[in-house]
Length: 173
Image (spheres, rainbow, N blue to C red):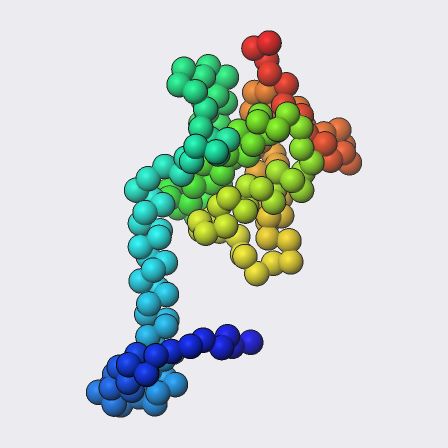
């Protein structure tokens, strides 16, 4: 489905000029401009994500300094095998695991689907190696590594076989 968008006469004129200069039809010019602009925006977004840690004040990642349990969870995660096609993907996936751990810690308990969907929803614009076009996009991430890795971290009590409820048990209390 193509969206209906309003384009000013001035902008349409610029696109027609571009098309004429490059021997393209107006439709081809619009397609090239949109694809180029989208690729540029995606690259800029990826550069920003790679340069800055993704911690927002209302995010579960925003834990207090000196949080011993979180430090232990990060150390445990460092010892686990988190698959990734390259170092950047592996690093992003480790961030996603810690985000899920923080989410469960903040909520106390959650279902598998709540954790998977919340994590994928937070990282939807990050290339974790899973398709956004799936009917259940969080489940590639969940089944691929998040479920098994999360279950290995301190404070996490996974569900029994065929279960669905996860709990966070604060080992420091």
